[in-house]
Amino acid sequence: MVSYEYILGGFLASLLAFVFFMIISTTLGGNKKVKTLSGGAKSNGFQPEMEEDKSTDVVIVGAGVAGAALAYTLAKEGRRVHVIERDLTEPDRIVGELLQPGGYLKLIELGLEDCANESIDAQKVFGYALYKDGKDTKLSYPLEKYSADVAGRSFHNGRFIQRMREKAATLANVKLEQGSVTTLIEEKGIVKGVIYKNKAGEELRAYAPLTIVCDGCFSNLRKSLSAPKVTMGCQLWANQ
Image 1 (cartoon, rainbow, N blue to C red):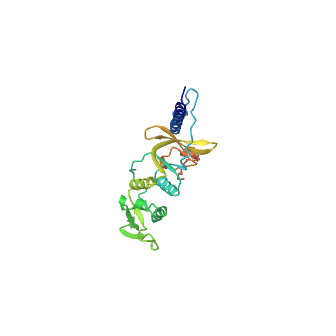
Image 2: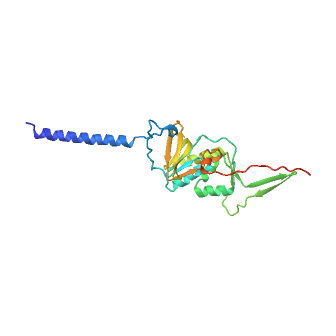
Image 3: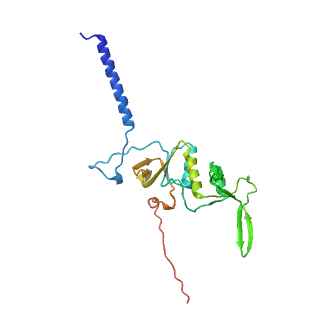
């Protein structure tokens, strides 16, 4: 005859085993990764369905001056931002080395003025010096109504961009990632996100209600966003 204690013990053991199985199944299911086949190719006629990520509000392509400033500003407002930049090493080219006073005022407005200070060897600029035919004159910026800190700034552009990236990355709701965006994900004419390859060469997808492309003059997405009609030609003038 089976005692009551054995029946109760067996029931409890079965119940605990069921609960443990459910916990393991839920954990593994929550961590399941859905992969996309490279180039949208199909395997055996079947394309795995992508799960749309709901954890991002804005995807920003490019982390230059515009992208980094946007990321910081939007994240300060509470939005979750995913920034994808082709190359996160410090840019090493001469471009945009002078920021006019109006630009510095905008940095103050955005809370980014410390990105253009002595930490990147920025120098204050108060106007222009003009030289012609052995003569020179100075033209000062009209800064009388501003504080002493407001002036132009001259700096190494690469250091300035790196400082802005670092500033944006200090916010918990900014994900700054190195990767090359190859394609915009569109549904019925609406951009839903991007397909990109990360630093390791893996093809991934990033979804968001808003995608902002600001990847500069080397953009490979511009043709998919606009189709400008450029007419090129020349005229020859001859002396009669």
